Figure 1: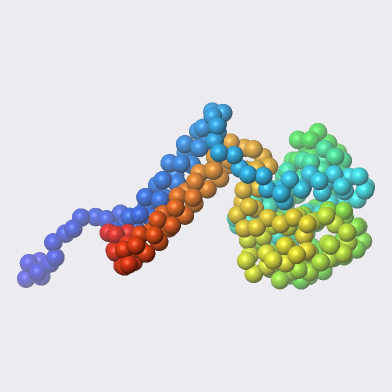
Figure 2: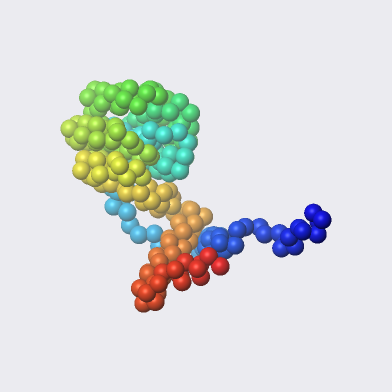
Length: 270
């Protein structure tokens, strides 16, 4: 009786039917990433990454510090390992290489004890690649405090005592964003800030000379390194975002003309 009343099998589904269009977009992203990376590695033309003023200003900031004979301060943010921190570490590699080439002192401060040894190795490797391993100073890569405002206070002390000419703040930032931005401005630093926290980004906008907003920070590593794999990935992601934007626009027009958005929702849920 139980077997007789059982519903007939419908086969095995690998994902919910209503997620079909999500699957299509993800598959399209994978295909575009593969194609763009292959084209970039082969030297074929791909859409360029637009100029980002904040990244263009890094060379200016380091050059100004070199002319003034003062150090550059760099911080990878307040969070542990995550997307923002990885982007900040990629930027740190470029900053360290440039500072080594200019023979400019670089001070790197860390809040997270797990991030500290990674930043130290990145800076060491950058000086080695620049052919100046003897110029690397371990004491200039500093772990300050894992307490949010303890770290902030320590950075303010560095601004007061060592008077850096440039302050580069990348990564993820919280309530300390305004404090550090104001302190850097008061110290006379040229400042470049990057943040993805929508509740704090405006503090960098009003206190920093240049600000990277949201995903501009993630494009930083591709823009600075010109690495084909990174560039191809960023270009493919942007192409999918443009496609999604066009689909949203087309869907809005369709729903407006049809006068019933339920038809569009039903179609996309099939």
